[in-house]
Length: 104
Image (cartoon, rainbow, N blue to C red; front, side, top):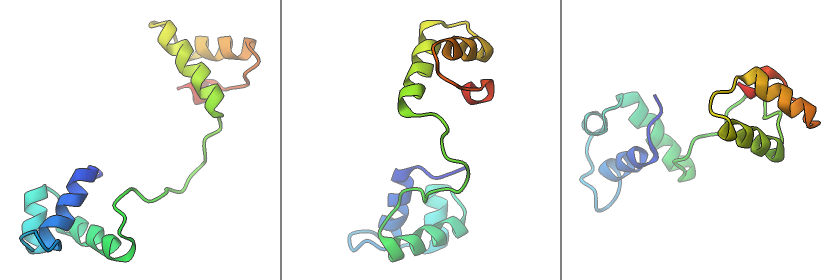
């Protein structure tokens, strides 16, 4: 499971920050409840880029536009007990080309 951003900052603070306690990787891992390899990887990334956010992931980009996504969410919120097929049909009737799998 990915670490929360505050945990990533804890790793840097506990091991490297001038005001931190400069603990070992093993001790930091125990304090943050993660693996020692995770601590090493996060510190390496911090040294390289000073960035603690998630790196962009590979894979297919979104197929819906923000406007289509907004319509999809609005429909789902209006009708509590609605299936993905129902939402797909309603959006297709409104001219939004979207598949049931995308709605899921």
